[in-house]
Length: 556
Image (cartoon, rainbow, N blue to C red; front, side, top):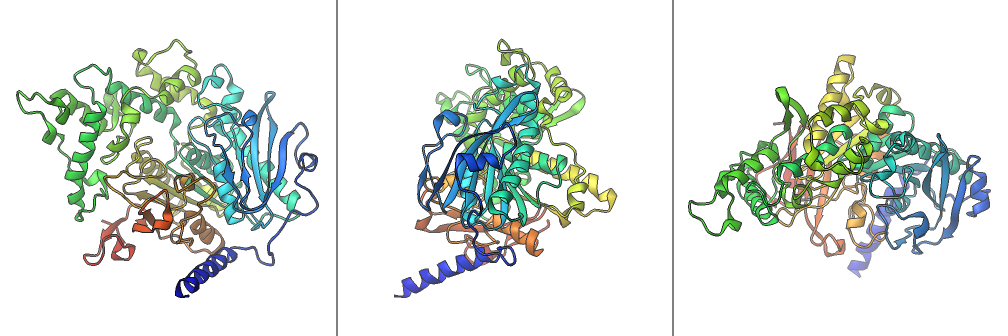
């Protein structure tokens, strides 16, 4: 009986929490004058649009995106609808006789708000998982495939219109038309508009902030791939530094695992708490020489030779070119657990970028690398995708809020790139008398990888309801928010809504690690506060180190 009472209390609390963000004077809202049919949806879209399908689904129904329209990078067999909703996909026209495809979810029980979801990699997919997850909160939600269906970049070759669509145009068009459809479908104005994306999606969010500051009231940008002109080359160069595979300086997967363990062994105690987590990788003094093979060693799988030590130093240091020119930040200590997917060979995110976006063609190979490609990349800035207009004052002046996070242990996009971006924004705004903290909060997440996840060595708290994280928690469509902690302290979406709508700034967030991330019902393993940069979480000196209340944010 006691357990039943507790469960009822939890359900009541969740209902009260979500209802507090309902627009004044509005209750649950179903579609008004329009049905979820191809003809009705087509009437809401611009001339030339093509509705591929439109169907209404009940809560807990399964939705499978048709393969013929969703053959790109992020396919999945099916999703479970958390709420009854109208789901449709349509192709919308763009300049240069091009088009992009958008997926839209319009829940019957609409919360009066609109959310746009970002993409990943070179895009090429509607982010169905993200917009279906958004409907759990009650958002009307939209996502674009950015103008193509693929995981590669061949579509960009000699196609400047397609590059512009990918870089910014398709996203903005999806926002404009998504808002229009939403307001027509429900017969009511949108109360607030939000954005959530990570990786390429984080970059897209920052691009919206810079180019179209009126599009959103709140933008959540995780691990943004904002420095496209340098990041894509860095994705390749770190593999070049570790190539070829038969060279004496090459780090094999065995050696990378060895290095990952040694980093935790040396760095974990340096933050004052031995819990497997490296709280600030840049503060660690790491000596890879501890792994140096003894003279005459025969089993070289358990040690590193002097050439491999040099490779480690190269990967752990910023990418610099002639005259000490800074190109891109270093791989952070504690990111080694995923290096095998990045440095084992030059990554296709880099080689495809050079071949197709820098227009060098299919015959180009990483063996042809020349530092002059950096200059070419900066000059071309394919698709105008790089988000380096650091003056965010237009977004600030319209009252927008930006919440930016990055995993300290990200192996795919170095966390230092987010620190660099933040510093440039501060430098651009302070001379104008703008305190970035009034509208821009940046968090580094110790132990978190790329957009989510953590290594078995660290078991660091990482769940904050960031974009894409729900798909890592159980089967897609079944898990939402931060299970058991659906509130503005733990859920970054609710934190942003609370900031925009109630003026309550998120001075800290609480990240969660579950005992079993694939089954959150097994309970919480540990939680920890995330601090607004440059503050860091510090242990108070007593109490359970896995409990968030025993940590506090301090500026060191």
